[in-house]
Image 1 (tube, rainbow, N blue to C red):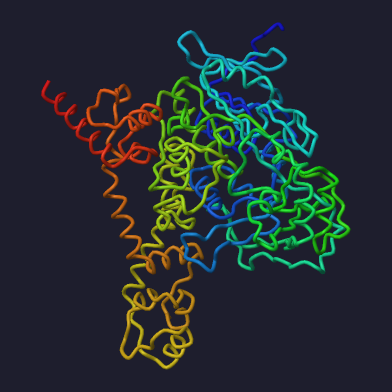
Image 2 (image 1 turned 60 degrees about the horizontal axis):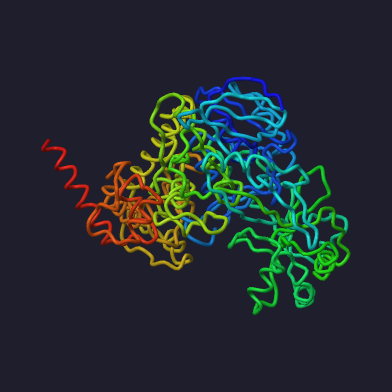
Amino acid sequence: MQEYLMGSYDVAVIGAGHAGCEAALAAARLGAKTVLFTLSLDAVANLPCNPSIGGTAKGHLVREIDALGGQMGQNADKTFLQSRMLNRGKGPAVHSLRVQTDRRQYNALMKHVLEQQENLDLKQAEVVAVRADEQGHISSVVTRLGAVYSCRCAIVCTGTYLKGKIYVGDACYSSGPDSIQAANELSQSLEQLGIQLRRFKTGTPARVLRQSIDFSQLEEQQGDKEIVPFSFTTNPEGLQNQVSCFIAYTNEETHRIILENIGRSPLYGGKIEGIGPRYCPSIEDKVMRFSDKPRHQLFIEPMGLDTEEMYLQGMSSSLPEDVQLKFYRSIKGLENVRITRNAYAIEYDCCNPLDLLPTLRFKAVPGLYGAGQFNGTSGYEEAAAQGLLAGINAARYTQGKEEIVLERANSYIGTLIDDLCTKGCQDPYRMMTSRSEYRLILRQDNADVRLTPLGHAIGLISDERYAAFLQKQEQVKQETARIQSITLPPTAALNNMLMQKDTAPVQTGVRLIELLRRPQVTYDDLTPFDTTRPSLPKAVCEQVEVSIKYEGYIQKQLSQVRRQQKDENTSIPADIDYAQISGLRLEAIEKLNRVRPLTVGQASRISGVSPADIGVLLIHLKRENGAKENV
């Protein structure tokens, strides 16, 4: 096929899912001339699985994306149908926002944002090759039609489209999600560049018709009365829930149907080679692995305001179409359900994230970055977080600036990427609060405190937004100081409130801050007795209350961060030969040579590298640094 040059760019982004959209927007907003390729303009920022944004730990990621200057949170706020704060019964460290979003509105809004973005071209085309020059540096991408686009960096954000293969029972065919064509040629080009690929798989439940559901048999799940937005720039006034979700349960008959037909599952018949997500198993996986459970929960969620399709969260499957209809109809409330789109499993190519630097640039290919499910993760939020960082770093790379590395101690995004690049993943990686050893200081309410100054320094946060952030922080500071200075008298009304809250009454004057430190007492509980309380935004009050209530724990965790910071700041030379370091175990040498950590802190988190190995490494680095100083 004859090739022809169609344009020259700084950054080329391959794939316009959640990773690709954030990557392209970040690169373009930082001044890099950017082109974003998608197989279909109708699938930009598609929600091919569940029609929701956020969730446990994922909500943290969305808030961090927003705090850095990304787009996902703003779009979710503008297109949500129902909003709920998860884990309200637990501590603030694990509070996570989740919204049902209008699938098509979200897609249309992101497409429009991309179309309006300066320095960004959005193109419908299949990229079939990524090429490097004689020095091995990325030089161009090529489309199926023979169009060549020169570029200095390329970001691979192919999601589940890379050699995508759909499985439903015995049926198996090449396709991406929602019957969009798969990208079948790019894999070979990436392998020729030296990128190691492997197969993962994921799945999605059926979509069903609203009119065929008996909602009177289901548990209704309403949204929160007081809505907290994802974006720190969204005014919460006027935000309203528009729909309810519903809960149903499988039963013995459901499980019997699945077990009788398990031999027809490609997952258990050996047809699917890819490794599936551990924390989001199919319904046949749940029934097989948790045979002691009499039932499994599923959520019935709307797909949008202009469609009658409903999504069956928690019921993904690759069983044949006839079996799907039988087991869905065995569920109370779904006896007459009509399926509009069948459940399916999808298998796809992805890279080994151990081949990436913490900047998400490939170690072996200068100028090539990876983001999203291509890096071995699952979930829209994990993808968008990686895309944002990859876009930032690709732009900075083309501009000759130092790339950004987010640390575990300042973000869930840093934790996610450090886990991928240091520990790797054997199945699709999902973010969870338990993955962070610093989750008390990585709360969703303080994502702006942790990351907005960095977003402003990079250039993604405007001066106007940064000024608003500084004003908020001043309000927090002043309100904290005011609370420390106020003393309340021991009135009957105050003591009555305290006893109703199952906490001890007071006999003498007590400082407001001491009462607020009590677990049973909230900021709002004290309002009737705090006559000087100013009118402040809810977000300011929340941050003040959390910082006071958990001050001791927070200081303890910050102390832990400071102790470990020395190792995080101790860099390791790129050309170090671990085999020449006397005292390192063979396993440590192998793992260190494979990962090539940038710092001692990163080296200490590699599986198979012991504290004794780190001690040997530190002695070696100290000796080498001493030798250099004496030269």
